[in-house]
Image 1 (cartoon, rainbow, N blue to C red):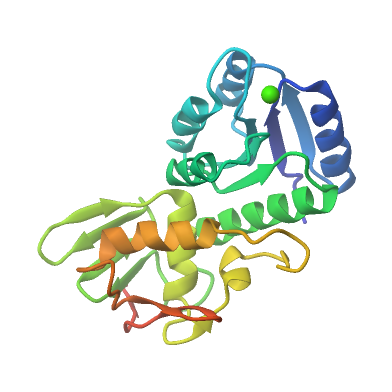
Image 2 (cartoon, rainbow, N blue to C red):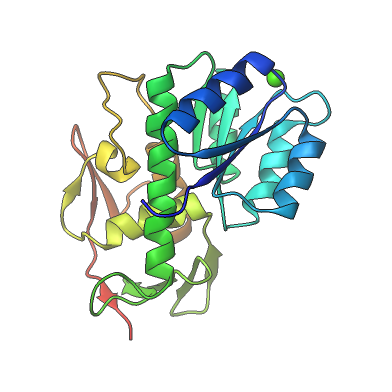
Length: 244
Ligand code: CA
């Protein structure tokens, strides 16, 4: 596994900090905890972690504001940790670019699964950005009128239109363009071992797909690039060429 991945936890409840530390250290992660947004932010600026877990209800600032600031730095992932289970918070968090969202109380197993998959998605994105793991793949893919540049997470259309993606959206789009014309399940797209029987149904992939559609489809309500396959998942319908 190489170097230990570093996880930064920003959470004011001591019990949760203790639990998260114990569980994640047990899986070989290096964990540092901060009880306030200000301390956490300072620590991240000193040394960016691989992944950051942020509680939304912090004593000194709104966690969503912090998440919005943090995701601008695409070097690390962000998972929201929240006692608020409301759909609007959840969707808002994902729209702000968070990689995932965990509602308290949570099972240690769910925490580990979500952390592992966020880290894995980041690694896939990083290796694609660095030129791709295999042969012809570079950091740019063409499909329809778009060129998807993994270096700066942008999409540029033939007519000059530009769209930018969050890291989480880029990771999802990468998984789709790497397997065109194939049906991919939500679990696969989540890049995870998350099993729908074990964990409550997770809409994060659907939210992200609809965000990407708004950026790349002429009419997001009748998508031609990313198709929904009912009961099965999604399919990327366009031909993909990797540019040299
Ligand atoms: Ca809190």
